[in-house]
Each structure stands twice: as structure tokens, then as C-alpha cells.
Length: 447
Image (cartoon, rainbow, N blue to C red; front, side, top):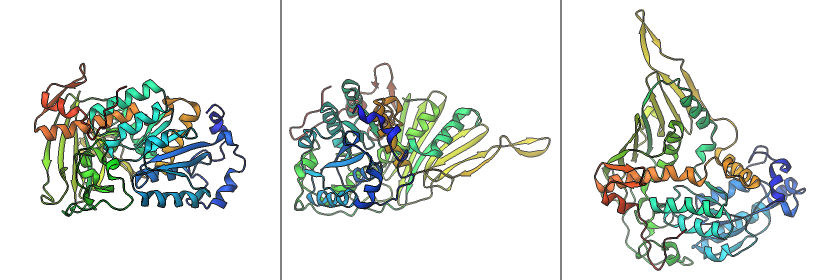
């Protein structure tokens, strides 16, 4: 990609979607790309094309140098749909694959987007970087702490650029809020609250096992997960609520909010974690992960509280999701809608006064954060400099590991303690839950 390192200087759009229409026909796109030579093209393949895999690819396709040349999915109907989506945007149909390993043999592919369920991320990413591809991997980076650690080692061994899809790192409001927290104006911060109240999430109805849909390679979908009969509840979006494949809202939403919290506070690993919750809202639905959870993390000098609830929107500070930094002088609240500072009140000569100046709700500015995250990834690839990444694999692993710690505390029912010197818990049961257990002939990668 030597000649591609001129991307930032040569590109006609310095930010994704800055002046480009949201939807482009193939003919329209030609007006943006006529001056781009073949050596400046960056060719992408996607593994897992239905949900965030396609959202990520769509964001990257707003960058003129980016092409989608390959799609891989276990569901032929998804492959066909996304093939036509790419054709409408670019006038060319990408090559289709059912087995991602075959796609990785394609020497024309520079970059791989991984949008598979969480239990696949580690294998996909390690195989991709070992095949010489740069990677954009969805969050959470993996379904176990061991896999997170393996993925970090793989990036370090193969030296490829790996961005994690924790795109809040590219949002203007989060950057502004983090800088404010680091300024010290809030005073001593004793508590950080992170939450996700998801009112749109209704019960997952119990359905019987059934036949595998036509065109679906179900054995490949299961991959290293335990062998099970096909059930529609576990397929596509709802895989998130089953332990075989993911970690529920603790990892799905938690990594976004915990990432910002830990970054602003300058910490990575807690001293202890305790969690309590369960299926309190929908005790009889099909999902396995808790619909209600409170997790308390102990760090040096402050605690962090994660909480989530499905089926209701009544979150903290009147918001369905967010992070609150609670200091002696004020509380800063930030979420996808913006950020604000709520001052504490003190009595001065008999008068109630704010300890510090209030900051009213400040909405995010500039382009879409996901699109900016894509531009940041391309910039880092072009410069061949992982330090430019907003959320490299090392960064993404911190949030993912902390979220996994919350689930481990919940599963053990104990207050678990982390030994940072040994990179493991002091509890044997908790340490067992750190490990990846692969099935069906798949083997945990060794790096």
C-alpha cells in the first residue's frame, strides 16, 4: 500500500460524507472518483454482511478510494442482498464466498471488515491478519477474555492495522467530554455511572427448533460454538442474548460506554468486580443473558457502576444510555445526544451558588461518528501507523475485557478480584470462565 499512503493528501473528501450525498448511484459515484488511479484503490472484503458488517462497509464506501470486492456470509439470501446493494452504489458486483477462509486467499483484498457474531471474531481476525489483511472488527472484540488477549497478540505479531468498531471514540461530544473530565474541573470523581436502558427490547418468544433455512450453512454459522439444533431465536440479531455466542447487553452496549469511562479516567483494570441481576423483566422468554443487571467495578480511588435494563427507557439523568462522571464540584453526563455539566450547589454567605459554571446540553457536531471512524481507519492504514487509530485492538480489548469481567462476576455470583501482575483472577472459577472452549473441530488460535 505504498502509493496509497498519499490517501489523505490526494483524497477529494477528507471526511466520510463531508460533501458527498448519503446515497450514491454508480453513475453519481463516478463524478467523485475519475481521478483515482488503480494503485490508490483500497479493496475490502466483508465477513458477516447482514447487520453491523454492512453498516461498517457502507460507511467505508463513502470514501472514494474504498472498494468492496468480496462478501462472505453463511446466508445466501444476505449475500445476494448485499451484492446488489454494492452494485447499486458502485456498478460492480463483489465476489461471493460462504467460507471466509477462501475469501482470505484472495490476494486482491487489502482489508477485511468482521461483522460476524462475537464467538467468531477471534478466529476471523487472527486468520485475516495472518493472511496479510488489515482489519476492522466489530465490538465487542471477542466472547472471552482469553480470545481478547489472543487478538492483541496477533496484531502485535503480524503488524497489521486493526480498528475496533467502538465508534463513539470518533464522536465530537465524547472527545469534548473526555477533555473536560481530564481538566479536573469536576473535582475529585468518586463514582462513574454507565448505563443502557433499552425500551425497544421486547421479550424473545420461545419457539421450537426447526429446519435450517434454505441457503444457510448452519454448521459454519455455529463454528466453534457448541453443536445445537437450529433455532430461529439464536440466528441473526438475537444471537446477542445467548451465552454460546455473546454476552448480552453487558458486552453489546457495555463496551461502548465503559470504553469512554475508562479512557476519561485513565485506568484499564479494576481491583474487584461484583454483579447482581437476572431475568427479572422477562423471566420466561427465550433469551439467556440477564435483562436486568448492576455491576460494580472497584478502581483506584473511584467506583464504576454499569447497569442495564430491557423493556424500559427510564435511565439515569433522563437518558436511555450514557456515562456520568460524578465529582465533588459537578456531574458531567455524556451520551449519543451530547454532553452537559450539572454543578453542585454550595452556600456562600447565605446564598446558593453553583460550585462551577453550568455547561448546558451540547449536541454533537460534524459528520456522522461512524463515518469519521471509518476515515480514521483509512488514515491509519494509509500512514501505516496504528498510533493514529481512535480505537485500535489494544484499546478495544480494555473495554471488552472489563465487560467480560462483569459477566464473569454475574455467573460466579461472587465478588471477584483481579491480579494485574498475573493477568488473571484470584478465583479459580472466574479463571475458568476467562477461557475459550472451541467445538466442532475448531481450535483456539495460537499466536
